[in-house]
Length: 243
Image 1 (cartoon, helix red, strand yellow):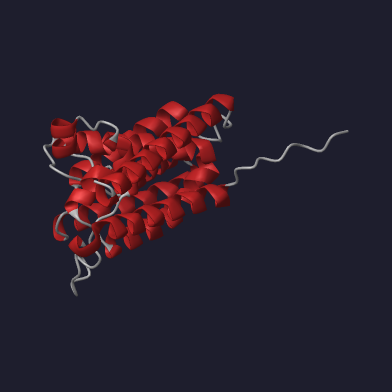
Image 2 (tube, helix red, strand yellow; image 1 turned 135 degrees about the vertical axis):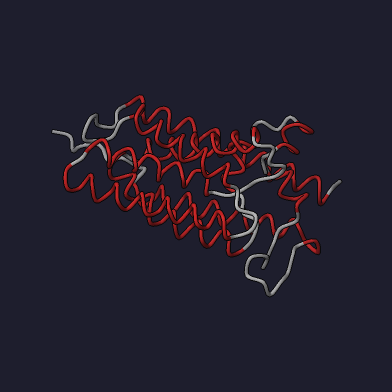
């Protein structure tokens, strides 16, 4: 009898892939910025990539979409960050939230929620006339929204614990949104609503185990994201170093 086939993509590998890709894109944005990179003792503006570099690497908002028809930026903007503190905060939050979503929804559904809810957040930002926006927080809010739905829908002791914890995260996001400058509340709100909707549509493991359709959707979104990010990096290289 043949041994059961092992899944090559594990939760740990997927999480590392997301974290390392965000970090890699941040380093690339700093390298491409060169002398235009922002240096400041203010932690909110330390190691800040150039606005132009962020624009052609895939930032979203009314400027990229209206002026350059860059609708693909709804996906790529989820992988870019505007400062060292920005990426540190988002990656620490992602390391906390993503494993719980993977546990309850499965790794493919987690990536789908992260990607689609992120795009929803950036689309709402566009409708809200945000000129330029980036950051994993839209997708992160989508994961929080999915957990909020899970906790409320599942009920019981565990469901209530998850619901209370995610409610606390949402309250913290609202406070940060009013106190910290340059926070995109449109993106947070759109991501959160997108995550709640996707949590309902895609379901979670206690209701329906992750199936083939979930893995196909997740893999297609991984492939699409990889192609768009590589395209942005390559185009940026030629614009800067050979243009």
